[in-house]
Structures are given as C-alpha cells and as structure tokens.
Image (cartoon, rainbow, N blue to C red):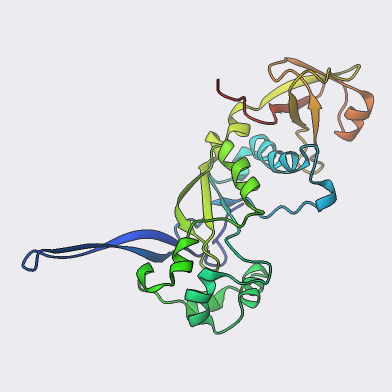
Length: 266
C-alpha cells in the first residue's frame, strides 16, 4: 500500500549533469544515476507469477486487472501514485550486465544474493554500501548502459499490459538490474477510471460475441474477480448461478465491471 514507510525504498533516477567552461568553450551533458527515495509512500504493484501451464485464455490479464478493480473499490486505502518495478535484463544463467558493471563493485556479492536479501526486507545494507554521490553512466560498460531502463524478454508482455493501462517510464530504474520503474496516478489507470458499479441478476451466460470483461465483488475480506463476456456499458449484469457463486454474490448485489482490454483506436 505504501513503500518506503518503514524501510527506505531505493531506486536510481536517470538524470543529467552538465560540465561546462566558457573559457575553454567546452560543454558536456553527462547522463547520470542518482540514488533516490523519490517513490516513498507510493503504492506498489508487486510481482505476479503465473504457472506456465496457465499462461493462456487471458489469465495473465485477469490477474493484473483484478488488482486495479480492488484499488478502485477501496480507493482510500491507496496512495495517489502507483509504481511497478519491472524485471531488468538478466540472462538464463543469472548474469546481469548492469549489476556486474555497478552493483557488484560495491556489494561484493552475487546478484542473486543481493536480490534475495532485498526481497526479504533486509535492505539496510543498501544504504550502508551504495555510493551517495551521482554515478556517471559513461563509466559503466557499454553492455550495462544498453540495458538501463530495459526489461527482461519475459517481462515485456507485463510491461505492455501496464502501459495500456496508462503506466509510463519516468526515468527511474532498479538499483540492482537497471529495470524500469513504471508509474501512474491511480485515478488515471484505465481500469480504475473506467470501472463501473452495476447490479447483478441471475440468468443465462453472456454471448461470446460480447467483449471480455473483468467483474469483481466489493468485499474487502472476500474479494473475488473473474472474466465474463458482457457489455461494458450495461446497467444490469446477468450472470449464471455458477458465476454468482464464484464471485460470492447474490442477485441484486453491486459488482464492479470493466472491459478487460482497452478498445483499439481506429
């Protein structure tokens, strides 16, 4: 709900430092990494992992969208800004160009070890070991510079989903692998902004010709979401008895509805 409140939350901001001399007629704008806590207090979308056998039939989209409908239902629990750290470029052997060129020189440990410690909440070592002054990226290897702000090939689909929801890269990257941090104001997230409360009724299944939508109940402790074929603009959503049971809802209850994917612009 809010990162960096109990422990500092670090990332690098990609910026520029200018070195200039009028006397020598020299002007150099140098790309730089600044260690920051700028996203302190922001709400974070954490990692989703879907078993490979279930990466089909829009299950990944459902998992991602279900979080946004939960945020829309319980808006007061979340910060105005939402961030998502994307996995950076790492090969099948665990080699990270960014880490090898930068992090390893200060942490003196394997990337997997540092990533594990951070993931389990042991982040004090970051403040203790990382340099506080700006880092000139020209001092990094060419391979490391090339992956700043880039995502792992398997993370590219997740990035595309978030960008369709309104998330953007604003020049913040992970301090370990250089992966991008995407961000968006919560009220500008498409699924939050366009979701609607509608009453449910019991009946037959929706036509498969209708768009695929995400529908979720409004129960904080027993939250459930699922995919249905429905008119996103309907005022009365007809669900089967099985769907009502899956959502833990009854006829007459209000549910939140939004189209699963943004409409393609013509």
